[in-house]
Image 1 (cartoon, rainbow, N blue to C red):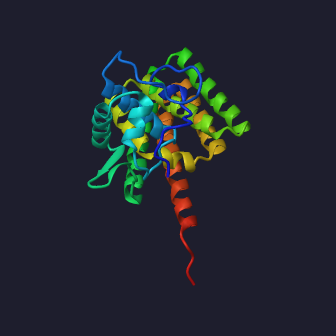
Image 2: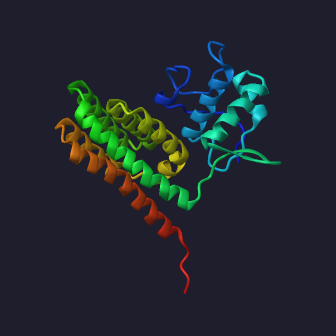
Image 3: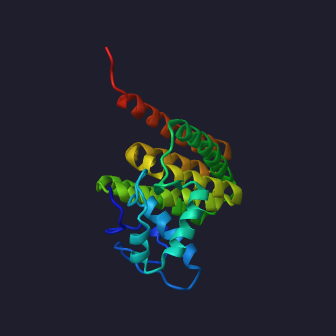
Length: 243
C-alpha cells in the first residue's frame, strides 16, 4: 500500500497550482494559507486516484513532498475528515474514507436528484456558447474513449458535470453535489462504462440545447440512476455463488 505521493497525474480541472503538464506535486507556495493549499492538494491526490480508499496518509511524506511543516498537513487532514473525504481512526491514523454499500446507494439517490435539478436549470439558463462548450466536452470524451484513455475520459467527465452545475447557478446544489462526488470518485472510476455513459451525456446536452427543461431533468436524474444500476449489477456479479 502506497504511503507516498510520487508519480502524480493531476487532472487539469483539479490542479491547484496551475500546472501546465502532468507530473509530481510542486512545493507549496505562500501566496495563501498553507493549510488551504495542502487541503486542496490532498483532495486532488484522492480524486486523481493516487490515494485510494482505505489507504493511510503518510503525514511525514506529504509534508516533505510539499515542502511544508507537519502542522498545515494536520490542519488540512482535520478539515477533510470533517468533509467526509478522510477518516480518522484513533491509534491508527488518517485514511482515505471507504464507504459502505448503503452509503454508496444513498449517495447515488441524492446525486441523481441534484443532477436532475441542475440539468433542468441549465436548460433554462444556458447560452449558445455554453451549449457549444458542453457539446465539445462530449466530443472530447468520445475521443478519449476511442483512444483508450479512460483516466482522461474521467477527468473530462468531471469537467462536464461541473460546467452543468455552473450553468445551473445553484450554489447549494453544487456544494452538496461536489461533496458527494468526492466521496465516490474511486468507485465511479472503476465502474465507468464510458461509451454508454457518454451517449447519455449527449442526449442531456441535446435537451439543454433545446431548452427542454423537463426532459433535461429526467435525463440527468436517469443518468445517475443508470450508474447506480451498473454498480448494483457489478455487486451481484462479485458475490460468490453457493450450491
